Length: 317
Image (tube, rainbow, N blue to C red):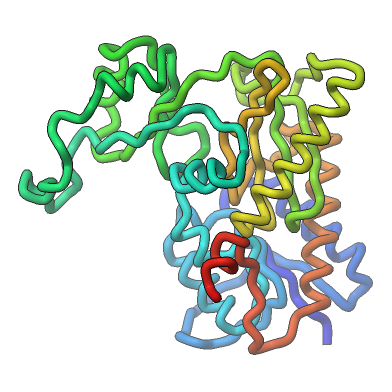
């Protein structure tokens, strides 16, 4: 009986269908791929998928619950829905600081508005005012402010000084924001990582319009570039091994030859042909299909089989 690989997706059109086609080409009839089909969700029921790639559950809580139920039944879910639910960017930074990964200086800020159903007495442990002089001197300006959770370049601000930060923080309502040192870079890279082993390094220009961000090239040359790319490769593997993500991107801003990890919590990264370009698109389709087939071959119904990072595994002894 053929093993099934499913993909759960929303508005994106290019990657999911190309992924399905490539798995079906490589699977030789023994492994088949399709869009996940859901007409009911009964607790504990097994709906027969060996592997599911998740591209949308961050926006649809019902799908996240479906994936957790699938994982209990032995489906290999890419990415781990339990960890994805628990993870967020500020924790990522804290963890990477312990692994020796270069990072921009980062501080977490309380939300501008109180969370719903809280009052002043809910914040007895929060000292008022915060030590803003320390924070501003530590981070410096200009700086970047972005949500401690979430992605898609939503609610990201460049702030020029404390007054500018206050004004823009006022637009964020109940979001918990983190403020980061600006890394003035000479090179910038976005890196695909599949299965914590397949790495694809892409020059990237975050200041360009979205559809032109991959339309750039290396600025570092010669042996310095070779050394830089080797460091980026090794950091990418190390970071994803710690986090446990099988499908992720890491972004590095290079200053004075040092790659600073800027963003590395992207468990449903952009893989659209129209933005990443043909070469990068071909790589991500090929390696996503290859990895999904590897995991489908290992599938044993009813046996939990899901990826956990070293942070979790090393904590359970």
